[in-house]
Image (cartoon, rainbow, N blue to C red; front, side, top):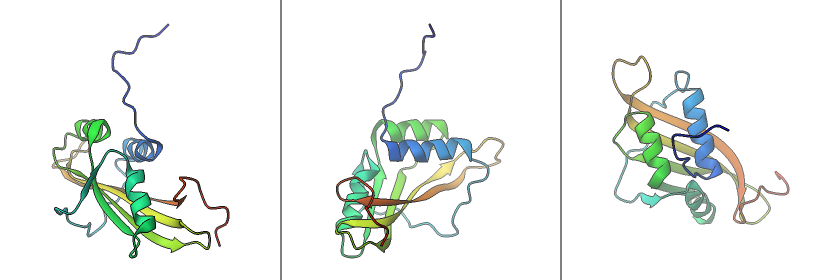
Length: 142
């Protein structure tokens, strides 16, 4: 039987997907030319799904926040960064099914140290997801 020396960190599926992507594709991840700047109106969240629901309900289809808690600490420690992890959610497409959209979710952070890098840099991870207010995917992409 194998003993684990580190206590596992509980994260939600969306944050885990972002972390896994960051850890496996570090060198290939492209940083957008212009990322939104952090501001005081970012909501602190432990789970990106909060922002996804907010974007679904927002008239402009957007929500912005800062990741907090164990997930944020683990990501920041891994990449030796001490800046906030920002999350931006925007609506790419609204589906006919009420409360369902195609969302673009972007996690980004300044001051990331990648292996072999000469200096820290801004790093981002972006993915699309079909999502509804009930947490499920839409029944149709129409």
